[in-house]
Amino acid sequence: MSVTMFDSLKEAIHFAPRGKKRLLDLGNLISQRYLRWEDKLIGMIGGQGAGKSLLIRGMFPGLELTNDDYNINKRPMPLLEDVEKTNFRYHTYHVDVRFENAFNQLGTIARTIQQGLENERRIVAEHFDLIYPILKRNAQILVGIGEEVIVTRPTILGPEPKEIVEVVFKSLKYRKMAHTAEDLTSLVFENFGFKTPVVHSDVYHGFVFQFDKPVEIDLQKVEDRIKEYIRKDLLVSFLDEGHIKIGDITYPCTGPRIHVSRTGEIENFRLNHQWIKCPVTKKYLLVGRIGNVSQARQNGKDSFSNRSNWS
Image 1 (spheres, rainbow, N blue to C red):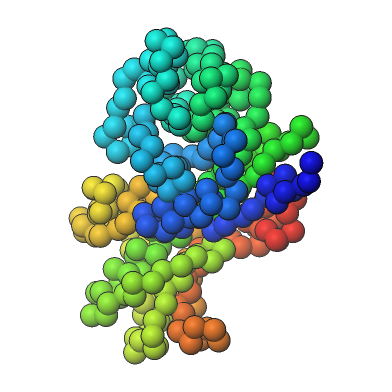
Image 2 (tube, one colour; image 1 turned 60 degrees about the vertical axis):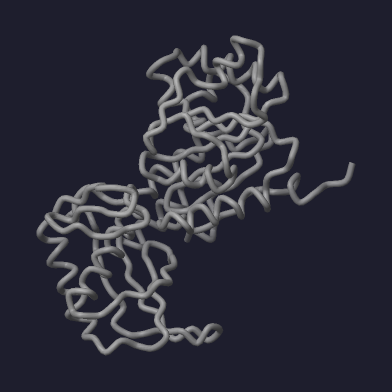
């Protein structure tokens, strides 16, 4: 049998975007590039507010999720109900292990997943790391989401879910810091009477705004105003699917769950005071960064795969 690109996949790493559309688009890209029809067990790993549900929606359009992130509460769990009736209505089932563990023992959940697999059903298991020690079989595709999205096809030598956990849980806080700082930067631009661009993108420990031309604004004053919001340690909270609250301010956001809980949790924010012209797109980029870059990169060296491109 010839070796395919799937068989030789060690890991793929993508920036984990923060907006709803970008997360859905990334999920769709992952399914097209790395998923094959015979994959039956897909393991999703990530902390609360990482965007797992949106990524799953992008990977499997139309799949009904069984958790309550979006006011969906499927009781009993469709897979469990169909296993008990020996009547499988769907090809693909979603199981949120952490959510389901409030209603069923992990052993019951593991047996249900196993019976689904034996009946040639595809199982998308969210919080797969919780069920793996009992299920005692790895997923055919593991997807971890923290500051970056890791896609890997485990072999008998790993990686095991706990290796993904060590990376994505540790790095998620930087993504939440960056997103909150990104929204604060947009807010400050509006305070100064300027619109922020539609195009946002990602860099390591930070964010990028893309403009057609440099904005006539004092970037030092912008940075100072953002740091003032950070010093005030304002509460940041989810309001609805299109808005957050920053203190008493209601602000639009397409990724309202992916934030730190208070502005004071943002570490070492700085704004690049010079516009960067992209030689390819000819657009002008404004870059904001957070965190202690050298220390965070050292943490990355000590984790999953000792990957050099995290250093």
